[in-house]
Image (cartoon, rainbow, N blue to C red; front, side):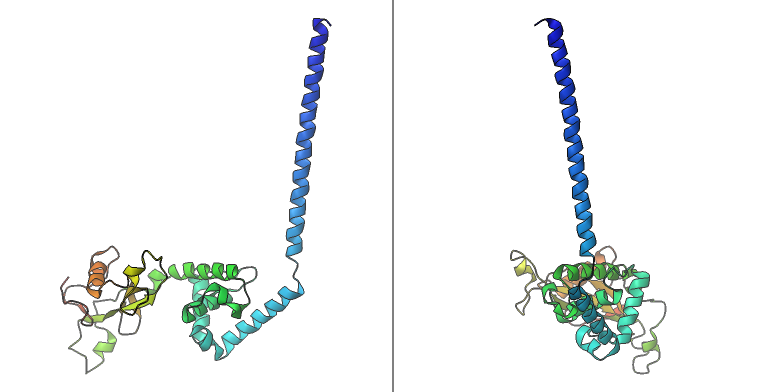
Length: 267
């Protein structure tokens, strides 16, 4: 066999391998197209409502109707129907909370409030006929929306004017004319790791955060400082509140009413 035959065989073999590679690539692409079409078909089929999902939706609609229009509202979310609807409207307008494909804002907020009011976990929320994953997603949607309203509702008091509740009371005016509110700590249950539990376990034996809250005389919260361990003293927390960024502001000559757990001091 001469040199020309060897060259010819090499060319033919190279051409064959190139065509084989093209066929292989085409087959892989065809398999990918078939797989994608099958996946799309499955998704389309899964979106078709079944009798079971339709029945669950009817149950949810009935529950939400009862929640908005009956005394059941107080039992489920510890809030009246008008206040509940008002909160939903605010979250929809100012908190960027939107209806999803299968859940209204009202349903999402209702689940959120029910979990807070009764210390419920996602897996125990059968009242709303939803899976734990869906309830968890809705809970965090509402939580993010509420956090967005912080600057709108948590506003420290205007100290240039005497509160009307003091000014219009012969009992308190002028003795409390420089008082701008009341503050205290409250213990809120939390779940923490076993390693951190001793720092959060207070005198009652369970793990908490010691949350500082300030309130004006018209019963509106004006400042909240969460995060401190249940074992932290009130005096330590108030010191942190006065010195941190976004601090509790007490102008010269003004004061808050407190209990004996807080020291007297000027700022």
